[in-house]
Image (cartoon, rainbow, N blue to C red; front, side):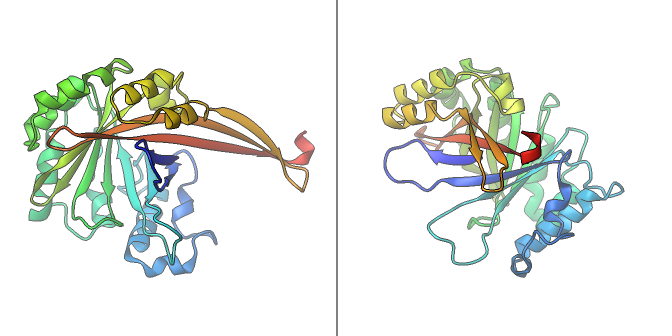
Length: 293
């Protein structure tokens, strides 16, 4: 997945690596030659490896994690080992405690995580998936919560956890975006000193986009970002033609089928209700050897 701000001008494009529990849990565990030794010189990568080893183990308390993704904030040419952000998704019956105690140094029962515990306990039971992010590469002690909720539930939740803004006014500001899908993904950063001012909302074009990564027409959503002065017309037009497929031949006779998809828009709000938007696109590929042609 790729992230691109929708405002005009030159911007970096960040990218994500998503791993499902049904797929390759071993990729981050360091049990094969895929993870360079230099990575393990960083505490963040050692913690990710230790978590991934538990994720592979059916007897481990972290085995029930549904999925993991790494986000890489790219700012120019990398001079060394990239330091990621890591997010993990769990179902309502699963506690974040064992994963968090592997991925960061603070005990789940520590005073520093008291606000996080309070926010976790306030999550509505209707929330099907809960994601927690450890923001290694950013200068903050905050942890991020990402919660899939109906819009009314999301803004009631902000009120309940003591978000320092005005939830009612933000709801009115965001209301035009809620016609596309019955749910949003709410982003809240939780710092030891309290809930942070910035909040984000992922807007999906339909059910398939949210849960399967293969949504319908992204044009109306992108048109709205232009109408709300969050996106330039030129960038909207470029993103609208991103979805599609290509087949590329390789020198060994294999072919690669690439499927490009538009995933969602995230709208980020500050306390003054000023908004910024980012677009998220994906690309999946499948390699067919020559004997399958």
